[in-house]
Length: 128
Image (cartoon, rainbow, N blue to C red; front, side, top):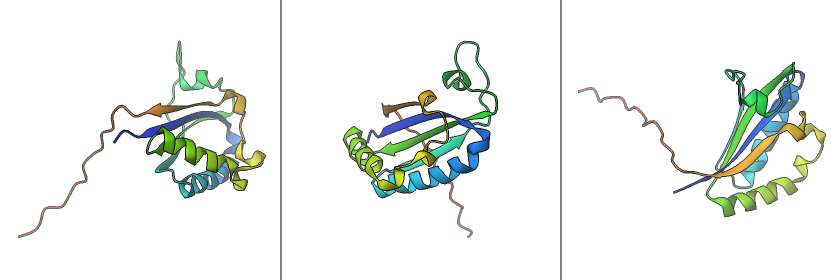
């Protein structure tokens, strides 16, 4: 089954990391309640500056900021559109606390899945 993914990259002032953590916990709850299959938020750990392009360059990262990368997974585009409509209308999403970053430098978009490969779960051998 081909899934649909929304991806986001944002520049976050380091001083707003606690506010962001609070906002994304609420956002994750909202998205999942409205039907998303998965909600993931990450903070940069190894994102080098590029010569032509990079995550820091893409969001015009300033001194004192971090890159955050997130994605939300849905069954398909139609499912995404329905979940997004409900999530964005949710009253808990209102207010400036949901964007403790410069939203004009946020990158986002929807993507159709081409392939997904997961590691198989390891099982313990039975003792005889």
